Length: 261
Image (cartoon, rainbow, N blue to C red):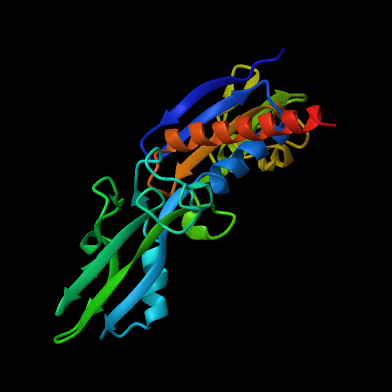
């Protein structure tokens, strides 16, 4: 049995980058799709606007509210379709919020109040609307878990990958400095008679053209550079772990289905 190997390159709260070895492009793409759209994410879903004296239409404000990333505990909330209330709505599958403010001034995401103490906005200073003198808004609504396959507000992250670059010298190098300068990512370097590329290489092939066939650059499909940038209330590491759990659940369901055949 071949085991996947993961070599961390960069890790922060909002971004994780690693080298995935002993893999295939098909698995990498499945992981990308799971990390992007197949993780339950909390977002504002229903909006009731009781007062809106601002210059924005109700629909514009509702759209802005829906796209504000929310921090939440994924272990506390259920998908409406999987909740004991059968989607009728309860504290286990929905979070109530309110937004009320009078002008003059700017309404920010931090002005949204939630009935669940473990739910808050990820970025407190996102402007929603500007209120002039005598303007006011009064809004209530519901946030729910959902998937990015249904709406972009439920997307968990931007996930993307590229093949690991490999370069070889197959001819006589005439001007090394010229070749390093032609690389738009400044990823090419030389040591003695060998050529090297950093992970910044995107396989554009400009160095190959400039070398007149002296360089050959290829990609290794079993070694993939993978990046996840969270755009939701989950950290990049949480997105990766939940994406892997989702793939494991799919594989388990598939095996159970095969046993019935």
